[in-house]
Image (cartoon, rainbow, N blue to C red):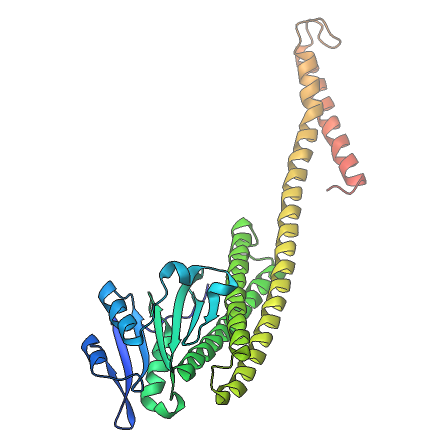
Length: 330
């Protein structure tokens, strides 16, 4: 199956994006947090942070960061919550693989315009936004804008994955129409594609819930809301596409199951025909093989008896064939 590869970058434990003389600079030093003020920092990106890094960021923000267990909770209250000073967002990011997809939990903490992200895998959405910040930092003046940029990029990647899966469905549909390699393995491939489509849908729905919560909040800047409306429309469109993909996959699955059943019925018909074809001669041979005196087995006519029995067997076979043809079973 096709998949979208992640942007591979060297592992960096922490990246601090901060304002420096009218531009955005990046540092990988925790010591810098002792020198910067809250108004200077825009984004702190933590990649598989250790205890010291998390404590340093918590001290800088004067708040607690989410644990991995909290990030993986599915309750609505754990996915998005607000206090007087912070906003906590826990969401899943889809990771495509060669055959199957997986989910990775990511946490965001927003505090006085600063966003802190905590993740354990390389994600293309993050590397894309980091490059964009360096190219045009004016588009990301606060952590709020960074969060929306990451979500917007993730939705675009989900759209690409849905398009790739649609092409895969087209390929499978053509194979079914041509009757090529339609077997149990083919059915398993369709089941895996259904699982991947379900994961994409769950990922998109998760982002929809996040956007809905943000649009109800009074803490986000008003200039973000037009973009949120566009993202929400894109999400609705993607959900419609995934629903259509599910319908197509269900149709393909039912068609493949029907074709497999037809093939199995054809094989069973052949076995049945062969069994019935051999039954009369087997019955005749069994009767005349019994140790009792039977007609046409008198002494001195063994050769003629053999030919008579052979003719009876052949006639019985032809009778079975005629019956099958008359009933259009051949």
